[in-house]
Length: 498
Image (cartoon, rainbow, N blue to C red; front, side, top):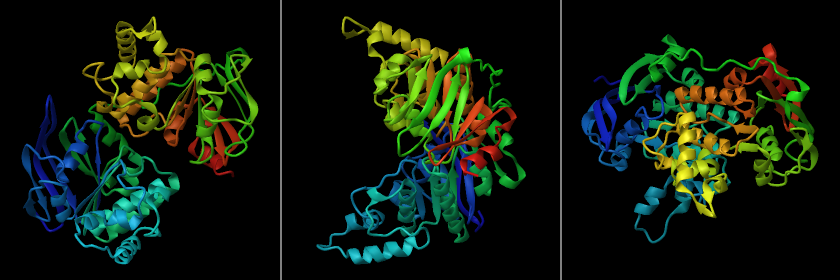
Protein backbone atom coordinates (compact mmCIF):
# COMPACT_ATOMS: atom_id res chain seq x y z
CA UNK A 1 0.00 0.00 0.00
CA UNK A 2 1.20 3.50 -0.78
CA UNK A 3 0.10 6.84 0.65
CA UNK A 4 -1.67 7.74 -2.60
CA UNK A 5 -4.15 4.85 -2.28
CA UNK A 6 -7.25 6.13 -0.44
CA UNK A 7 -9.20 2.87 -0.56
CA UNK A 8 -8.41 -0.71 -1.54
CA UNK A 9 -10.46 -3.90 -1.46
CA UNK A 10 -8.86 -7.31 -1.97
CA UNK A 11 -10.50 -10.62 -2.81
CA UNK A 12 -14.03 -9.62 -1.85
CA UNK A 13 -16.53 -12.48 -1.97
CA UNK A 14 -20.29 -12.26 -1.41
CA UNK A 15 -23.08 -14.77 -1.94
CA UNK A 16 -26.84 -14.53 -1.52
CA UNK A 17 -29.21 -17.53 -1.59
CA UNK A 18 -28.82 -19.00 -5.08
CA UNK A 19 -26.53 -16.22 -6.30
CA UNK A 20 -22.78 -15.59 -6.26
CA UNK A 21 -22.76 -11.78 -6.29
CA UNK A 22 -19.00 -11.14 -6.03
CA UNK A 23 -16.06 -13.48 -6.73
CA UNK A 24 -12.62 -12.34 -5.60
CA UNK A 25 -13.11 -8.69 -6.52
CA UNK A 26 -10.20 -6.23 -6.25
CA UNK A 27 -10.46 -2.45 -6.48
CA UNK A 28 -8.17 0.53 -5.80
CA UNK A 29 -9.13 4.19 -5.41
CA UNK A 30 -6.36 6.80 -5.52
CA UNK A 31 -6.23 9.98 -3.48
CA UNK A 32 -8.03 12.85 -5.24
CA UNK A 33 -9.26 10.96 -8.30
CA UNK A 34 -12.67 10.39 -9.86
CA UNK A 35 -12.83 6.65 -10.53
CA UNK A 36 -15.71 5.21 -12.59
CA UNK A 37 -17.14 1.81 -11.71
CA UNK A 38 -19.10 0.31 -14.61
CA UNK A 39 -20.84 -2.94 -15.47
CA UNK A 40 -24.20 -4.26 -16.56
CA UNK A 41 -27.11 -4.46 -14.12
CA UNK A 42 -26.36 -7.41 -11.86
CA UNK A 43 -22.58 -7.13 -12.33
CA UNK A 44 -22.06 -6.54 -8.60
CA UNK A 45 -21.44 -2.76 -8.45
CA UNK A 46 -24.08 -2.02 -5.81
CA UNK A 47 -23.14 -5.08 -3.77
CA UNK A 48 -19.49 -3.98 -3.67
CA UNK A 49 -20.43 -0.42 -2.67
CA UNK A 50 -22.79 -1.73 0.03
CA UNK A 51 -19.91 -3.79 1.44
CA UNK A 52 -17.59 -0.77 1.44
CA UNK A 53 -20.33 1.24 3.19
CA UNK A 54 -20.95 -1.46 5.82
CA UNK A 55 -24.49 -2.27 4.68
CA UNK A 56 -23.45 -5.83 3.71
CA UNK A 57 -20.76 -7.98 5.27
CA UNK A 58 -18.40 -9.79 2.86
CA UNK A 59 -18.02 -13.57 3.02
CA UNK A 60 -14.28 -13.12 2.44
CA UNK A 61 -11.78 -10.41 1.54
CA UNK A 62 -10.17 -7.32 3.06
CA UNK A 63 -10.79 -3.56 3.03
CA UNK A 64 -8.06 -0.95 3.53
CA UNK A 65 -8.60 2.79 4.06
CA UNK A 66 -5.47 4.96 3.83
CA UNK A 67 -3.38 1.79 4.11
CA UNK A 68 -5.06 0.60 7.31
CA UNK A 69 -7.09 -2.60 7.36
CA UNK A 70 -10.65 -1.91 8.54
CA UNK A 71 -13.88 -3.80 9.13
CA UNK A 72 -17.14 -2.10 8.22
CA UNK A 73 -19.74 -3.62 10.53
CA UNK A 74 -22.30 -0.94 9.65
CA UNK A 75 -22.59 2.42 7.82
CA UNK A 76 -21.51 4.25 10.97
CA UNK A 77 -18.12 2.47 10.77
CA UNK A 78 -17.82 3.62 7.15
CA UNK A 79 -18.63 7.21 8.14
CA UNK A 80 -15.93 7.13 10.83
CA UNK A 81 -13.50 5.99 8.11
CA UNK A 82 -14.44 9.05 6.04
CA UNK A 83 -16.68 7.27 3.52
CA UNK A 84 -19.86 8.96 2.29
CA UNK A 85 -22.42 7.21 0.07
CA UNK A 86 -24.93 9.19 -2.01
CA UNK A 87 -27.42 6.58 -3.21
CA UNK A 88 -29.30 6.78 -6.50
CA UNK A 89 -32.58 7.05 -4.60
CA UNK A 90 -32.46 10.31 -2.60
CA UNK A 91 -33.34 9.70 1.05
CA UNK A 92 -34.09 13.09 2.62
CA UNK A 93 -36.94 14.21 4.87
CA UNK A 94 -38.88 16.67 2.67
CA UNK A 95 -40.82 18.41 5.44
CA UNK A 96 -37.84 19.83 7.35
CA UNK A 97 -35.06 22.25 6.45
CA UNK A 98 -31.81 21.63 4.62
CA UNK A 99 -29.81 22.14 7.84
CA UNK A 100 -31.96 19.65 9.76
CA UNK A 101 -31.38 17.05 7.03
CA UNK A 102 -27.64 17.67 6.90
CA UNK A 103 -27.22 17.31 10.68
CA UNK A 104 -30.08 14.88 11.33
CA UNK A 105 -27.86 12.16 12.81
CA UNK A 106 -26.30 14.70 15.20
CA UNK A 107 -29.69 16.06 16.21
CA UNK A 108 -31.08 12.56 16.78
CA UNK A 109 -28.08 11.56 18.89
CA UNK A 110 -28.30 14.65 21.10
CA UNK A 111 -30.00 14.48 24.47
CA UNK A 112 -30.15 18.26 24.89
CA UNK A 113 -33.49 19.74 25.93
CA UNK A 114 -33.15 22.54 23.38
CA UNK A 115 -31.31 22.50 20.06
CA UNK A 116 -29.09 25.37 18.88
CA UNK A 117 -30.54 25.55 15.36
CA UNK A 118 -28.72 28.80 14.65
CA UNK A 119 -25.46 26.90 15.06
CA UNK A 120 -26.63 24.11 12.72
CA UNK A 121 -27.68 26.69 10.11
CA UNK A 122 -24.25 28.35 10.27
CA UNK A 123 -22.41 25.03 10.00
CA UNK A 124 -24.58 24.02 7.06
CA UNK A 125 -23.95 27.35 5.35
CA UNK A 126 -20.19 26.79 5.71
CA UNK A 127 -20.45 23.37 4.06
CA UNK A 128 -22.73 24.59 1.28
CA UNK A 129 -20.22 27.32 0.37
CA UNK A 130 -18.11 24.53 -1.14
CA UNK A 131 -21.01 23.26 -3.20
CA UNK A 132 -23.96 25.48 -4.09
CA UNK A 133 -25.83 28.63 -2.95
CA UNK A 134 -28.63 26.70 -1.24
CA UNK A 135 -30.11 28.34 1.85
CA UNK A 136 -29.79 26.26 5.06
CA UNK A 137 -33.33 27.21 6.15
CA UNK A 138 -34.93 26.18 2.85
CA UNK A 139 -37.46 23.33 3.01
CA UNK A 140 -36.17 20.26 1.18
CA UNK A 141 -39.54 19.70 -0.50
CA UNK A 142 -39.07 23.03 -2.32
CA UNK A 143 -35.70 22.06 -3.84
CA UNK A 144 -35.05 20.60 -7.28
CA UNK A 145 -33.77 17.04 -7.56
CA UNK A 146 -30.26 18.32 -8.27
CA UNK A 147 -30.30 20.58 -5.20
CA UNK A 148 -31.50 17.67 -3.07
CA UNK A 149 -28.54 15.70 -4.39
CA UNK A 150 -26.24 18.52 -3.29
CA UNK A 151 -27.78 18.29 0.20
CA UNK A 152 -26.96 14.56 0.23
CA UNK A 153 -23.34 15.40 -0.66
CA UNK A 154 -23.28 18.08 2.06
CA UNK A 155 -24.39 15.46 4.60
CA UNK A 156 -21.42 13.31 3.61
CA UNK A 157 -18.98 16.22 3.85
CA UNK A 158 -20.11 17.13 7.38
CA UNK A 159 -18.91 13.66 8.42
CA UNK A 160 -15.36 14.64 7.35
CA UNK A 161 -15.81 12.63 4.18
CA UNK A 162 -12.59 11.76 2.31
CA UNK A 163 -14.13 9.17 -0.01
CA UNK A 164 -17.43 9.89 -1.77
CA UNK A 165 -19.50 7.24 -3.58
CA UNK A 166 -21.96 8.60 -6.17
CA UNK A 167 -24.43 6.04 -7.56
CA UNK A 168 -26.01 7.10 -10.89
CA UNK A 169 -26.08 10.76 -9.76
CA UNK A 170 -27.25 12.22 -13.10
CA UNK A 171 -30.11 9.78 -13.78
CA UNK A 172 -32.83 12.32 -12.89
CA UNK A 173 -30.99 15.58 -13.66
CA UNK A 174 -31.43 18.08 -16.48
CA UNK A 175 -28.48 19.03 -18.65
CA UNK A 176 -27.75 22.24 -16.70
CA UNK A 177 -28.13 20.42 -13.37
CA UNK A 178 -25.74 17.74 -14.58
CA UNK A 179 -23.17 20.38 -15.53
CA UNK A 180 -23.49 21.92 -12.07
CA UNK A 181 -22.92 18.53 -10.42
CA UNK A 182 -19.83 17.94 -12.57
CA UNK A 183 -18.41 21.29 -11.46
CA UNK A 184 -18.95 20.27 -7.82
CA UNK A 185 -17.25 16.91 -8.43
CA UNK A 186 -14.19 18.55 -9.97
CA UNK A 187 -14.04 21.04 -7.08
CA UNK A 188 -14.14 18.20 -4.53
CA UNK A 189 -11.45 16.35 -6.47
CA UNK A 190 -9.24 19.45 -6.33
CA UNK A 191 -9.75 19.49 -2.54
CA UNK A 192 -8.28 15.97 -2.38
CA UNK A 193 -11.54 14.07 -2.00
CA UNK A 194 -11.64 10.72 -3.85
CA UNK A 195 -14.84 9.88 -5.75
CA UNK A 196 -16.22 6.53 -6.90
CA UNK A 197 -18.58 7.32 -9.76
CA UNK A 198 -21.14 4.69 -10.86
CA UNK A 199 -22.82 5.40 -14.18
CA UNK A 200 -24.22 3.71 -17.29
CA UNK A 201 -23.43 6.81 -19.36
CA UNK A 202 -20.14 6.32 -21.17
CA UNK A 203 -19.90 9.98 -22.21
CA UNK A 204 -19.83 11.01 -18.54
CA UNK A 205 -17.19 8.41 -17.72
CA UNK A 206 -14.88 9.71 -20.42
CA UNK A 207 -15.37 13.42 -19.72
CA UNK A 208 -15.34 13.38 -15.91
CA UNK A 209 -13.31 10.40 -14.70
CA UNK A 210 -9.60 9.62 -14.44
CA UNK A 211 -9.83 5.83 -14.40
CA UNK A 212 -12.52 3.22 -14.97
CA UNK A 213 -12.89 -0.24 -13.41
CA UNK A 214 -15.14 -2.94 -14.89
CA UNK A 215 -17.19 -5.62 -13.16
CA UNK A 216 -18.93 -8.43 -15.06
CA UNK A 217 -21.06 -11.16 -13.47
CA UNK A 218 -19.50 -10.49 -10.07
CA UNK A 219 -15.91 -10.69 -11.35
CA UNK A 220 -13.31 -7.92 -11.57
CA UNK A 221 -12.34 -7.51 -15.25
CA UNK A 222 -9.79 -4.70 -15.09
CA UNK A 223 -8.95 -1.04 -14.51
CA UNK A 224 -8.00 1.37 -17.30
CA UNK A 225 -6.84 4.97 -17.59
CA UNK A 226 -9.61 6.85 -19.38
CA UNK A 227 -7.03 8.62 -21.56
CA UNK A 228 -5.69 5.28 -22.83
CA UNK A 229 -8.92 3.48 -23.78
CA UNK A 230 -12.23 4.15 -25.53
CA UNK A 231 -15.94 3.56 -24.95
CA UNK A 232 -16.13 0.72 -27.50
CA UNK A 233 -13.48 -1.26 -25.61
CA UNK A 234 -15.08 -0.62 -22.22
CA UNK A 235 -18.58 -1.58 -23.41
CA UNK A 236 -17.38 -4.84 -24.95
CA UNK A 237 -15.53 -5.77 -21.74
CA UNK A 238 -18.64 -4.96 -19.71
CA UNK A 239 -20.92 -7.27 -21.67
CA UNK A 240 -18.31 -9.90 -22.55
CA UNK A 241 -19.21 -9.82 -26.22
CA UNK A 242 -18.85 -7.56 -29.24
CA UNK A 243 -21.60 -4.93 -29.45
CA UNK A 244 -20.91 -3.70 -32.95
CA UNK A 245 -24.57 -3.03 -33.81
CA UNK A 246 -25.78 -0.83 -30.97
CA UNK A 247 -28.59 0.45 -33.19
CA UNK A 248 -30.58 -1.71 -35.65
CA UNK A 249 -31.11 -0.84 -39.29
CA UNK A 250 -33.60 1.95 -39.96
CA UNK A 251 -36.77 1.75 -42.10
CA UNK A 252 -36.52 1.98 -45.88
CA UNK A 253 -38.49 5.24 -46.19
CA UNK A 254 -42.07 3.98 -46.36
CA UNK A 255 -43.91 7.32 -46.16
CA UNK A 256 -46.86 7.13 -48.57
CA UNK A 257 -50.02 8.93 -47.47
CA UNK A 258 -51.96 5.67 -47.08
CA UNK A 259 -49.34 4.62 -44.50
CA UNK A 260 -50.13 7.52 -42.16
CA UNK A 261 -51.12 6.09 -38.78
CA UNK A 262 -51.31 9.29 -36.77
CA UNK A 263 -51.57 12.96 -37.70
CA UNK A 264 -51.29 15.81 -35.21
CA UNK A 265 -52.64 19.18 -36.37
CA UNK A 266 -52.04 22.50 -34.56
CA UNK A 267 -51.88 20.80 -31.15
CA UNK A 268 -51.63 23.24 -28.23
CA UNK A 269 -52.29 23.28 -24.51
CA UNK A 270 -51.72 27.01 -24.07
CA UNK A 271 -48.85 26.73 -21.58
CA UNK A 272 -46.27 24.04 -22.27
CA UNK A 273 -46.52 23.71 -26.06
CA UNK A 274 -48.16 25.40 -29.04
CA UNK A 275 -49.00 24.60 -32.68
CA UNK A 276 -47.42 21.14 -33.02
CA UNK A 277 -47.87 19.47 -36.41
CA UNK A 278 -46.57 16.13 -37.68
CA UNK A 279 -47.43 12.79 -39.25
CA UNK A 280 -46.42 9.35 -38.02
CA UNK A 281 -46.15 6.61 -40.64
CA UNK A 282 -46.72 2.90 -40.26
CA UNK A 283 -43.51 1.17 -39.18
CA UNK A 284 -41.72 4.45 -38.44
CA UNK A 285 -39.82 5.57 -35.35
CA UNK A 286 -40.34 9.32 -35.01
CA UNK A 287 -38.13 11.04 -32.46
CA UNK A 288 -39.17 13.96 -30.26
CA UNK A 289 -35.97 15.81 -29.36
CA UNK A 290 -35.19 18.98 -27.47
CA UNK A 291 -33.77 20.26 -24.23
CA UNK A 292 -35.38 19.19 -20.94
CA UNK A 293 -38.43 21.42 -20.44
CA UNK A 294 -39.05 21.90 -24.17
CA UNK A 295 -42.46 20.21 -23.86
CA UNK A 296 -41.74 16.81 -25.43
CA UNK A 297 -43.37 14.64 -22.75
CA UNK A 298 -46.31 17.03 -22.50
CA UNK A 299 -47.02 16.66 -26.23
CA UNK A 300 -46.91 12.85 -25.99
CA UNK A 301 -49.20 12.83 -22.95
CA UNK A 302 -51.66 15.25 -24.60
CA UNK A 303 -51.92 12.97 -27.64
CA UNK A 304 -53.03 10.02 -25.50
CA UNK A 305 -55.22 11.87 -22.99
CA UNK A 306 -52.86 11.95 -20.00
CA UNK A 307 -52.58 15.77 -20.23
CA UNK A 308 -55.29 18.16 -21.46
CA UNK A 309 -55.10 19.94 -24.78
CA UNK A 310 -56.84 23.21 -25.61
CA UNK A 311 -56.56 23.31 -29.39
CA UNK A 312 -55.81 21.07 -32.32
CA UNK A 313 -56.76 17.66 -33.63
CA UNK A 314 -55.34 14.15 -33.36
CA UNK A 315 -56.27 12.06 -36.40
CA UNK A 316 -55.73 8.36 -35.79
CA UNK A 317 -55.97 5.90 -38.68
CA UNK A 318 -57.94 8.44 -40.71
CA UNK A 319 -60.45 9.34 -37.99
CA UNK A 320 -60.51 12.44 -35.77
CA UNK A 321 -60.20 11.15 -32.23
CA UNK A 322 -62.19 12.21 -29.19
CA UNK A 323 -59.65 11.25 -26.53
CA UNK A 324 -60.50 12.78 -23.17
CA UNK A 325 -58.87 10.20 -20.90
CA UNK A 326 -56.06 7.67 -21.24
CA UNK A 327 -58.64 4.85 -21.23
CA UNK A 328 -60.02 6.29 -24.49
CA UNK A 329 -56.56 6.18 -26.05
CA UNK A 330 -55.95 2.58 -24.96
CA UNK A 331 -59.30 1.51 -26.43
CA UNK A 332 -58.32 3.04 -29.78
CA UNK A 333 -54.80 1.56 -29.79
CA UNK A 334 -52.68 4.49 -28.56
CA UNK A 335 -50.44 3.66 -25.57
CA UNK A 336 -47.77 5.53 -23.60
CA UNK A 337 -44.65 4.17 -21.87
CA UNK A 338 -43.70 6.48 -19.01
CA UNK A 339 -40.19 7.82 -18.38
CA UNK A 340 -40.58 7.12 -14.63
CA UNK A 341 -40.48 3.33 -14.64
CA UNK A 342 -40.54 2.78 -10.87
CA UNK A 343 -43.10 5.40 -9.84
CA UNK A 344 -45.58 5.44 -12.75
CA UNK A 345 -44.80 2.28 -14.71
CA UNK A 346 -44.07 -1.03 -13.02
CA UNK A 347 -46.02 -2.33 -10.02
CA UNK A 348 -42.93 -3.34 -8.08
CA UNK A 349 -44.75 -5.47 -5.48
CA UNK A 350 -46.71 -7.43 -8.09
CA UNK A 351 -45.48 -10.42 -10.09
CA UNK A 352 -44.35 -10.34 -13.71
CA UNK A 353 -47.60 -11.90 -14.94
CA UNK A 354 -49.72 -9.49 -12.86
CA UNK A 355 -47.85 -6.53 -14.35
CA UNK A 356 -48.33 -7.74 -17.91
CA UNK A 357 -52.09 -8.24 -17.47
CA UNK A 358 -52.64 -4.99 -15.51
CA UNK A 359 -53.59 -2.80 -18.48
CA UNK A 360 -56.43 -5.05 -19.67
CA UNK A 361 -57.61 -7.42 -16.95
CA UNK A 362 -60.77 -8.28 -18.90
CA UNK A 363 -58.88 -10.27 -21.52
CA UNK A 364 -57.49 -12.63 -18.86
CA UNK A 365 -60.80 -12.93 -16.99
CA UNK A 366 -63.80 -15.23 -17.25
CA UNK A 367 -67.24 -14.35 -15.89
CA UNK A 368 -65.79 -11.48 -13.90
CA UNK A 369 -63.06 -13.55 -12.24
CA UNK A 370 -59.35 -13.64 -13.02
CA UNK A 371 -58.48 -16.68 -15.14
CA UNK A 372 -55.06 -17.76 -13.85
CA UNK A 373 -54.52 -20.02 -16.88
CA UNK A 374 -55.12 -17.16 -19.33
CA UNK A 375 -52.92 -14.82 -17.28
CA UNK A 376 -50.10 -17.37 -17.18
CA UNK A 377 -50.39 -18.07 -20.91
CA UNK A 378 -50.31 -14.38 -21.80
CA UNK A 379 -47.30 -13.75 -19.57
CA UNK A 380 -45.44 -16.74 -21.01
CA UNK A 381 -46.06 -15.51 -24.56
CA UNK A 382 -44.80 -11.96 -24.02
CA UNK A 383 -41.92 -12.86 -21.71
CA UNK A 384 -40.68 -15.29 -24.38
CA UNK A 385 -41.15 -12.79 -27.20
CA UNK A 386 -39.32 -10.06 -25.28
CA UNK A 387 -36.73 -12.43 -23.78
CA UNK A 388 -37.40 -11.40 -20.18
CA UNK A 389 -34.79 -12.92 -17.88
CA UNK A 390 -36.44 -14.25 -14.74
CA UNK A 391 -36.60 -17.35 -12.56
CA UNK A 392 -40.41 -17.48 -12.60
CA UNK A 393 -43.37 -15.47 -13.88
CA UNK A 394 -44.43 -15.25 -10.22
CA UNK A 395 -41.24 -13.31 -9.47
CA UNK A 396 -41.87 -9.78 -8.21
CA UNK A 397 -41.01 -6.97 -10.62
CA UNK A 398 -38.93 -5.26 -7.90
CA UNK A 399 -36.36 -8.08 -8.12
CA UNK A 400 -35.75 -7.60 -11.87
CA UNK A 401 -32.99 -5.53 -13.46
CA UNK A 402 -33.90 -2.17 -14.99
CA UNK A 403 -33.74 -3.61 -18.51
CA UNK A 404 -36.11 -6.45 -17.65
CA UNK A 405 -38.49 -4.09 -15.88
CA UNK A 406 -38.58 -2.05 -19.08
CA UNK A 407 -39.41 -5.18 -21.06
CA UNK A 408 -42.27 -5.90 -18.65
CA UNK A 409 -43.62 -2.40 -19.26
CA UNK A 410 -43.47 -2.92 -23.03
CA UNK A 411 -45.17 -6.31 -22.65
CA UNK A 412 -47.98 -4.62 -20.69
CA UNK A 413 -48.50 -2.18 -23.57
CA UNK A 414 -48.37 -4.90 -26.22
CA UNK A 415 -51.04 -6.89 -24.38
CA UNK A 416 -53.69 -4.43 -25.67
CA UNK A 417 -52.48 -4.80 -29.31
CA UNK A 418 -51.63 -1.12 -29.94
CA UNK A 419 -51.14 0.51 -33.33
CA UNK A 420 -49.05 3.40 -31.94
CA UNK A 421 -46.69 3.42 -28.96
CA UNK A 422 -45.35 6.62 -27.41
CA UNK A 423 -42.14 5.77 -25.56
CA UNK A 424 -40.59 8.27 -23.13
CA UNK A 425 -36.87 7.80 -22.27
CA UNK A 426 -36.89 4.06 -23.13
CA UNK A 427 -33.38 3.26 -21.83
CA UNK A 428 -33.00 5.59 -18.84
CA UNK A 429 -31.11 3.90 -16.00
CA UNK A 430 -30.35 0.63 -17.80
CA UNK A 431 -26.98 -0.76 -18.84
CA UNK A 432 -25.50 -0.81 -22.35
CA UNK A 433 -26.20 -4.47 -23.00
CA UNK A 434 -29.87 -4.07 -22.04
CA UNK A 435 -30.02 -0.85 -24.08
CA UNK A 436 -29.01 -2.76 -27.19
CA UNK A 437 -31.78 -5.31 -26.53
CA UNK A 438 -34.41 -2.57 -26.00
CA UNK A 439 -33.29 -0.81 -29.20
CA UNK A 440 -33.70 -4.00 -31.21
CA UNK A 441 -37.07 -4.67 -29.60
CA UNK A 442 -38.37 -1.19 -30.50
CA UNK A 443 -37.22 -1.61 -34.09
CA UNK A 444 -38.85 -5.04 -34.30
CA UNK A 445 -42.14 -3.48 -33.17
CA UNK A 446 -41.80 -0.87 -35.92
CA UNK A 447 -41.01 -3.58 -38.47
CA UNK A 448 -44.29 -5.26 -37.48
CA UNK A 449 -46.12 -2.10 -38.58
CA UNK A 450 -46.50 -0.35 -35.22
CA UNK A 451 -45.86 3.39 -35.26
CA UNK A 452 -43.43 4.53 -32.57
CA UNK A 453 -42.93 8.04 -31.17
CA UNK A 454 -39.75 8.05 -29.09
CA UNK A 455 -38.59 10.73 -26.65
CA UNK A 456 -34.96 10.59 -25.54
CA UNK A 457 -32.50 13.01 -23.97
CA UNK A 458 -29.55 10.98 -25.28
CA UNK A 459 -28.62 12.35 -28.70
CA UNK A 460 -26.75 9.22 -29.86
CA UNK A 461 -29.94 7.24 -29.17
CA UNK A 462 -32.09 9.71 -31.11
CA UNK A 463 -29.68 9.69 -34.05
CA UNK A 464 -29.18 5.93 -34.01
CA UNK A 465 -32.84 4.93 -33.61
CA UNK A 466 -35.10 7.47 -35.29
CA UNK A 467 -36.17 7.58 -38.95
CA UNK A 468 -37.21 11.22 -38.57
CA UNK A 469 -36.76 13.66 -35.69
CA UNK A 470 -39.10 16.47 -34.65
CA UNK A 471 -37.12 19.01 -32.61
CA UNK A 472 -38.77 21.29 -30.05
CA UNK A 473 -37.62 24.54 -28.47
CA UNK A 474 -39.47 26.13 -25.55
CA UNK A 475 -42.79 24.48 -26.40
CA UNK A 476 -42.68 25.10 -30.12
CA UNK A 477 -41.76 22.94 -33.07
CA UNK A 478 -38.48 24.20 -34.54
CA UNK A 479 -37.98 21.67 -37.34
CA UNK A 480 -38.19 18.08 -38.58
CA UNK A 481 -34.99 16.30 -39.63
CA UNK A 482 -34.74 13.31 -41.95
CA UNK A 483 -32.01 11.04 -43.33
CA UNK A 484 -28.48 12.40 -43.24
CA UNK A 485 -29.69 15.66 -41.71
CA UNK A 486 -30.24 13.85 -38.39
CA UNK A 487 -26.97 14.96 -36.79
CA UNK A 488 -26.01 16.13 -33.33
CA UNK A 489 -25.18 19.60 -34.64
CA UNK A 490 -28.55 20.04 -36.37
CA UNK A 491 -30.54 18.77 -33.39
CA UNK A 492 -28.69 21.05 -30.94
CA UNK A 493 -29.07 24.01 -33.29
CA UNK A 494 -32.85 23.55 -33.54
CA UNK A 495 -33.25 22.66 -29.86
CA UNK A 496 -31.45 25.87 -28.91
CA UNK A 497 -33.71 28.00 -31.09
CA UNK A 498 -30.91 29.05 -33.43
